[in-house]
Length: 218
Image (cartoon, rainbow, N blue to C red):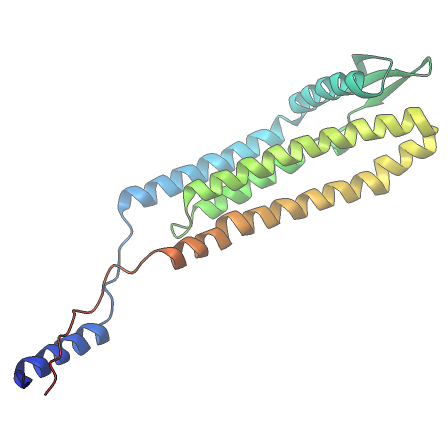
């Protein structure tokens, strides 16, 4: 059989030109830029507000840790104030202890930077806002829970092993736990925001394809 060679060559050249032409540059919509900047500013402002209000947050931390201690190991508990600081009062083996939640134990000093990190990432329109917010929520929630575990563990160690247990869990053990938490937050942002963004980009099918070329046998 014979085919129209001229038509085939013409279609082939058009296909080659379509493949060699650069892809059009996609401009980011103005509304999307505004949304990213607004969310970024709100997150940064929220991070600053968390750090400024660390005193109020410490009170809530102490109250929550008091309830957890009562539900886990302590014979009895009560929220108290000691030297102007919110404190966890708990009883173990008929002895009462008072653990003050000082500014060094304030979770706000961790939550603020996490929120501000998310805000800075939101300024990049290449990153998806929903992924940034998801990573921020995971990081903030995880650090709050981790600090509660730390506070309750310090109280348990004090009531069980005395001053030595208190110093170990308040110092090396507690510091290591919070450092691991910070590392976990950074890994979460990388996996959810950065790597997740790349995965979505790779999985997205190409919208532009070369025109089909029909070739007849000569």
